[in-house]
Image 1 (tube, rainbow, N blue to C red):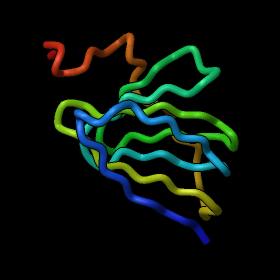
Image 2 (tube, helix red, strand yellow):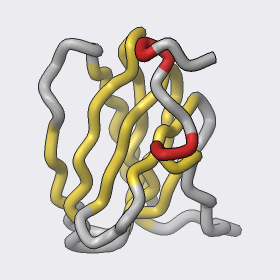
Image 3 (cartoon, one colour):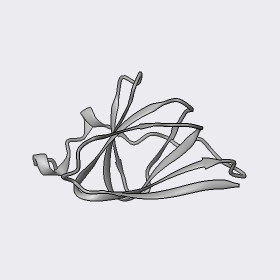
Image 4 (cartoon, helix red, strand yellow):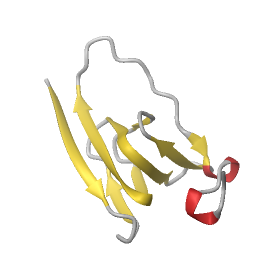
Length: 101
């Protein structure tokens, strides 16, 4: 059995820190999310449909893009689960509200 929680984050909300209690998949349902994980040297911009695996005890910092975002956090077993690739490193893609194309 898996637990899936859906969250919405507005652009003007402050950056949030999340401590992961058990291995989880973080997936963007709509919008864009800026994500950084303590101990990881890269920051990531995740767009709709992109996901990352978060290990137990990870601390993830998240913030929404210009239009806000909706995302899911899923934990527990999943039959046939494959490891997701992280999104585009933030240094390689500027957020749209900074004038990036």
